[in-house]
Image (cartoon, rainbow, N blue to C red):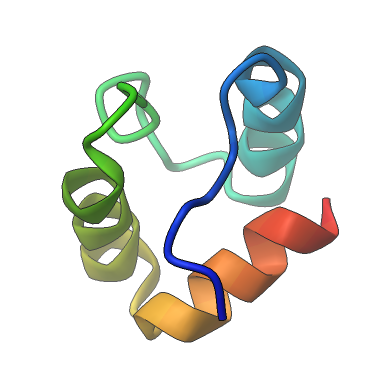
Length: 62
């Protein structure tokens, strides 16, 4: 699995899909900054109770 999520440029679109699927996530949970993939994924892992690879695969499928 690639380490780079490559979310730059399309995060606003994906963010809406993530919020639809998981309405309990806050704007702070979904704050994505270039170069801080691990921090971002850590927040999602904590909130969703899923593993890193599962979250990355899900995000890439959106």
